Length: 68
Image (tube, rainbow, N blue to C red; front, top):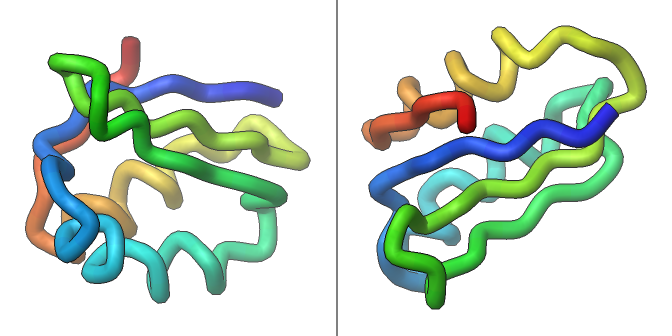
């Protein structure tokens, strides 16, 4: 399953802050943040439909996240 989120992750330092949490999620196969897009889109490849863990992980890292 693909999921796309609008975030306020706006630099490589922010990506580094959220990386450990997203990398340890079992259901996330791949993810990337489009820092060039005005909405700083987070693209996530999941192997199930549990998007809540992605949202919670990003919020716990101190960032805003909203499904697009």
